[in-house]
Length: 543
Ligand code: C2O
Ligand code: CU
Ligand code: CU
Image (cartoon, helix red, strand yellow):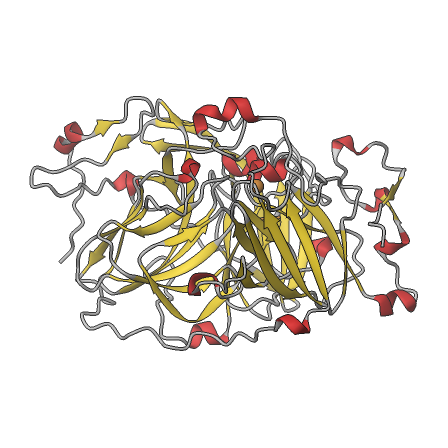
């Protein structure tokens, strides 16, 4: 039976509008069922086409301005990749060689970063790799990560929050032999659904792109850019690839009817075994894949729930996505096979294997008293006006593009020990995926026991993560680590690290350790960087 009901002209009269936002609520039929407004059908970002040349998969991305009727008949100004809002899904296989032509058709500079991917710093799309208006940047690298849901977004220093708000973000899916061999839902857009969650503010039906003031919290949810989103799926196990693509909001995802679901993947790969749960905490920048069973034929509404673990600023209950099972679908399966017990093998480093322990102290570190300089504390979106202009340091320093904060030796296993006495900050490290050792000494719960590149560090918490820096070293550009609350990042809650290979340097390979590289060698210069003939003097930490 196809339960899709097309919105009739008559039922238009049943639509009510939220007075201040101008966003219509879904219409309710006389029998109490909720209309499936065709305008609210979930947008599925298309898979990006590629060509193959000399064994390389070539993708073209164009950053452009656009216009979207989030509310039917009311246009909002937006930005997108190859379209009006968000971007196509890049899908590759582990082992592929990729080349991405990134053309900037905006009238402002930008960069594009491949969040979560293990790529050379020079290909990472950091603040050092500005793409001027009208310019094209080429990024090429082999896919060294395992099957995972990554994403891409701008990363120019100071404008990231604004450009992401305007719509610049997309998913980057990696598959591998293991993921393809597993008996899990994997038909993109059918039973394997991308879910990009962003909180927004609407005024009279227009999406506001104003993020002035402090940290941004919206009160209206967009799911893949769709308001009041619903999607029809086969009545069976369905996989959701969730990206928290919001500027700051932390979510506690769960279903309206409290049904159990399984998390199968964290940021950087599949979990070893499916983790059953009824709510899933996700901070900005994080991804998770979940599988929910809809073989009962009942609708399930993915929501963000009230949760004691959320700071007040992130509270509130909002619908994210209505899943409408189609019992007549070919794939519908009244007797679903259980998920495989083994999804992945994760080789874990032990604490004693670590060569280095590296502390990252957020704002004032860990103490009895929350740090008053932390602008995230107790702020809701009414207070945003009062909060601008301050920066939250890491290890006492705010971002300086001309300063290298940490130097890592190639091949080292490192523990990064991140401590925080302010409000929660999701900390993201480029280049690598890490495993969480513990939070205040307690091993991670199953939902964050897999590969991660972003970890929420709560008030008065010390989180220890372990990783290995391999493959890439002696690059001319540093990697970043930062808070993924995008206004914190833009405000300077970010540092830079380089990976050096002492052996190669001894053999005469050029290195950032030479302390200088010609600024003129950077393809596009940040406007405030001064003359491009000045050598870029890279200040290293005292050793
Ligand atoms: Cu998703 Cu450095 O960022
Ligand atoms: Cu990143
Ligand atoms: Cu932060």
